[in-house]
Amino acid sequence: LGINTPQAANEIIARLFNKSISNTELQPSQADVYRFQSILTDKSEKEVRAILAQRALGNKITESVLSDFADKNAIEPNESEIQSAYSVIKLWTVDLDSDGAYQDEELERYRLAMAEGMAKSWKVSKALYEAYGGDVVFQQDNPLTPVGAYQKLFEQYREKGEFVIYDPAFKAAFWSSVKMKYANPIFMPQLGQTVEESTLVRWIKKVGDNVN
Image 1 (cartoon, rainbow, N blue to C red):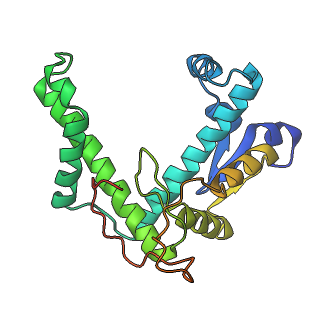
Image 2 (image 1 turned 180 degrees about the vertical axis):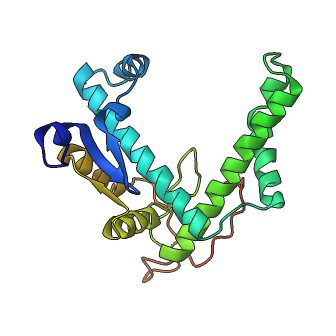
């Protein structure tokens, strides 16, 4: 089917690194729909399905673009960074030691995989901030999330044609989330009566450090 035919327009939602993404592959499971309907009580099942499908596309684009950025910049955490993340993961999952549901080797693999992911996410975020700057916000899964840098990176990849979103509703939802104004950006302390804005010039937090 050509991309401009009615059938294709309904099915092919986006293209990501020359791979087509269909509407079908973005659809949530019925279990996910039920779970989110219990949270989004003011939304119909159709609306919840649309929200989850749009979120799935956003996740695909985000993961692929960040992975490509990391590969092109040879970003990999070192052993020290992984161990720092591991100490945090172990603290978070200490209850599993006495749970009995996991064997020691299985639990160790789980913790190490989480630590490697956390350390790489931190290092990618650090590199993005150093490259693009912008707002940084606190999020549970990534305490220092450079949302301003994400926006610039996505715009750069879009301009290069690395991804395109054909469907208007999916396109609007994706860019709305990327350009969202957060309520909790991390600002520098006020340095005086005449200093209202400042710039974070160095990213000194190590992986796993608390953000106060």
